[in-house]
Image (cartoon, rainbow, N blue to C red):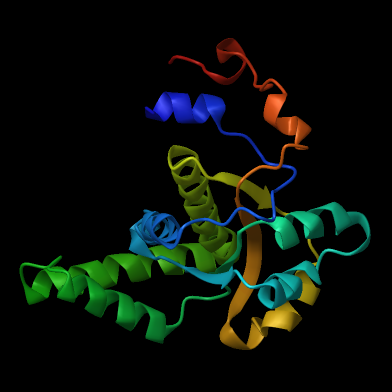
Length: 217
């Protein structure tokens, strides 16, 4: 299946078959694609929680009561549920670990190049933290790049997926003790295989036409 066909055929799954489980090798491929997501200045501000067991999925579903109840069903019936979290700040420790990982990966030809990378990245962080004062938004934008990459990869692998923003952030944060780890929950993603009762599987896509969203300069 080519990339355009994936985009044309994947959709947001509304109902999952609880008896169908993603094979371990296939799930690990998705995690590797997620790990390889690009980010601005390679900041990689995300951390992902994986819920596969009924107990783990229930912990995530606790944040989906009331108006979010239909999302809880997706979490409980899906094969796997991911909680994509974003760092609430960029700590010195994170920057040091990142720079050393880049060094181990062979990114620098010299000590000067390594120092230049550190200086350049710090400049961006200063820009968003102090001048634009939207560091949190910039960081979360990177996590949503990861979400997009994951959704497309799942479609390419024949795995159904649902991005879920409908949850109580405080409930989920408290349940996973995210705040003390310097994290906040950005989006929940369910992965698995559609149920025969999922009417969204046969619904046509509704996207704006080219002339509405593209302008040639």
